[in-house]
Length: 300
Image 1 (cartoon, one colour):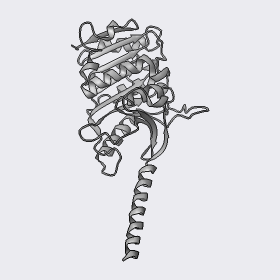
Image 2: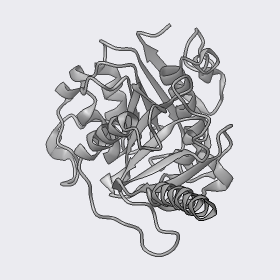
Image 3: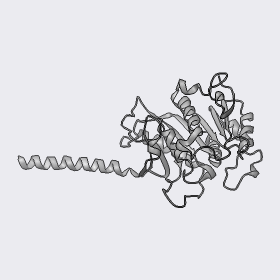
């Protein structure tokens, strides 16, 4: 009897070890950025074994998320369409710390040395969406029933903003954020790596849209402002801060751009009424900031 009990104990221990090992192996790389961000959910940057082509920013402790408290999804395209989000880790990590699953195109940035500069395709944004939906439905996934697949944003900076515009017609998307970007009036003006889009693409947008631009010194200023002028069928908000094309992404916790983007995501993806005040009203909350110049259409 004692021998049987001992064998049973060993089986239980092995099962627990096996489960823990499987769970651990799902994450093949993990790093903390800026002490996890300033939000209530300390965030981490990770590479998932099931999605090694992307970098994920999410709350470290996933145990508090469930069917009643789900994470909205944000997918991100990088500046220059790089296949790694090394220019934006502070920005993306900060957003994740406020309770979002952020999936960026490309491999995790290196801690030291030359960063990845190969280019990526817009389809990787759709790959990220597909992966998140699959993980939410898979019982053995650490994301099982923890993701809100009905609240989903596509976003990106510069070339990545064009990638976001290229896939914004996907019906699963519920909001669009275009940073330091806009469609050329002549598609031939773009660099070879850029998605070739015409202004007709703007007519395919079906969600509330935010443009974040770096003021008149931003090389994308004219394109982005012209996009804003031509979008008349959905709510659209444009915010300019005089920082040029580089934005504030690399500043501590992503700077002002992260603050504005996070509030937009809180409003659009979490129905946060307090965050909405930054964009709604006449004047809107953001218009009261001396750092920002704003305009909006089809919005309260």
